[in-house]
Length: 65
Image: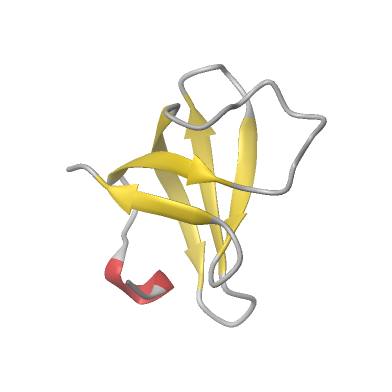
């Protein structure tokens, strides 16, 4: 999956990432707010309330809707 396969409003589920300070853990779902194709960042409002970006190619996630 590429960052361009996602768009604002898509739902994603976190599989894994390196962020150890976040309360967002694998299995958490969220809504895509913005896709920055140039920087390969996918900004997500997680259901935990956090707004954090996925790093495309580093973090693992799946589109759920």
